[in-house]
Image 1 (cartoon, helix red, strand yellow):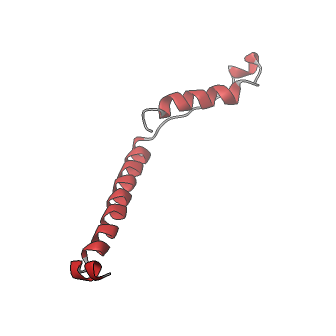
Image 2 (cartoon, helix red, strand yellow; image 1 turned 135 degrees about the vertical axis):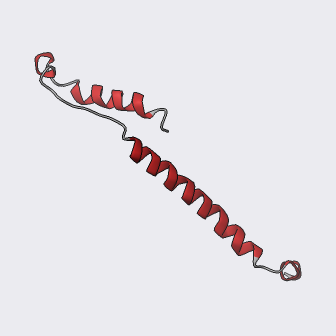
Length: 72
């Protein structure tokens, strides 16, 4: 996702300015930048949630007795 961010930002800029007359574009000051801290926070949050959503079900299953499951 992060790799496609820069082309996506360029596309967003082009879509926003396509209806603006050429003479006005020189005065138009739109700036899009990807903040590295936001990217780092997103990666960290994604990793934490992946770990959480992977460990909780495995922890719940590990608490079940195999003999109990075989009886059912």
